[in-house]
Length: 155
Image (cartoon, rainbow, N blue to C red; front, side, top):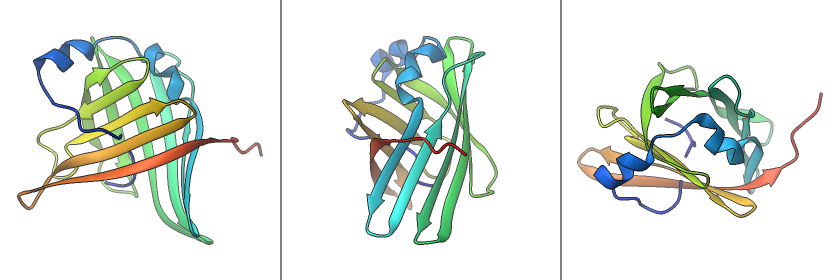
């Protein structure tokens, strides 16, 4: 799975699960455009505003003029939880369920997924920290992404 998702390792437990309820509106801070630039590598995410119990995201990673990866995400309400459905670079979709959701942070988990098992976002002022995390080949692995707010393209 691609670049999506949060900074700071969070313990996964019953106390956090209680915080995972709540509607999609509490994730309004994610809406808009986010970008991470490192040399000629640019990672972009564009999130729609919450509407009809859902948010959509489209993301891509480019190096120069070459598309490296892309992803489509739907976050939607399902009962008292939020569900993160990701389809990265044409792979089969994967579903993750919220274990933490608040006006500044959201973490999703799917313990049965190969890698990652957790995906998260954390608001840090004008910045966005994201991570993917889990176990691969018996080793815990975490990949962090650091975004800044960016102007959304208007075409």
